Length: 359
Image 1 (cartoon, rainbow, N blue to C red):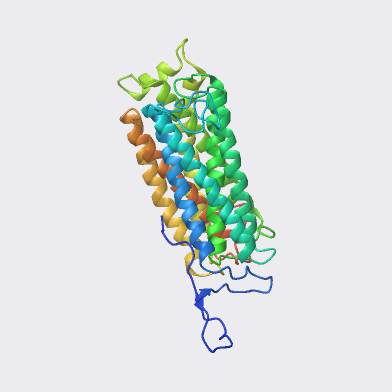
Image 2 (image 1 turned 45 degrees about the vertical axis):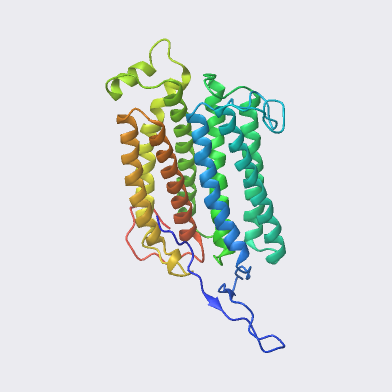
């Protein structure tokens, strides 16, 4: 996936009274419909930092689950074992408590992002919406984690409700990353989304995002099943038989759903990326859909390979974390592909499309 998302254009501000030029700020091109205004350098830096930091927090949260440390603070939340600061903590307590601290810092970053967005951007700027949405999603993320702890849906719990909560947690995590990504892009001078007049393309993009969320939720349940019910068969087929034995949990029954969905969703996203990859964006070279088509095709192939290895190796912890990291990157790639295809006015279609498909 490309590291850069938006191509920066820098322009000098007007000279001040003393004849000294102001510091350079991101220049945002304007169009007849009005583009976002300038927001300086600090806000984009904070937004990109928050995005990268939250990916690390997500991976650390996965380590908490894999290490069985989810109950490290008992069934207490937001306190840890009934106190604000653990005394003589065990290793599991240290791991769980550190995750809570890092998650709390995510909240502080989101609050700072909202404050800076309100202070540095004009009314109506999309970065305000993105920052506020990011804060709300982080709050909900914390509440979902709290529910897991308070209901005892941690450590070795095989309660079917744990699978549902885990899926919701992952879907919200993806939504949070998407909101932070768009906030960072808008803070960096990226254009607004234009949903009106996109026709079938808008529906296809929305379908891709929803399918990716569903795939992620199914993956969360499968990862939970791999943790609680370690595959013991010699082959994947033996694991499937184990998952559908009379004594199997519903979490085991659902473990097979993710790999099946993965093939279908990956095929759809691969096709969709190819469909929009020839469109020309009006917003600069770094927002060309073709760039994100190539990136997404590559990450889909890599993620499928990682999924196959995960099954063959019987889901070791390190492989689960790598698989989750690639899932986050793939999700961000899908968001960026859809964004790059939908910004600006719909471009004239010059290539042949499948019969019945119009963008």
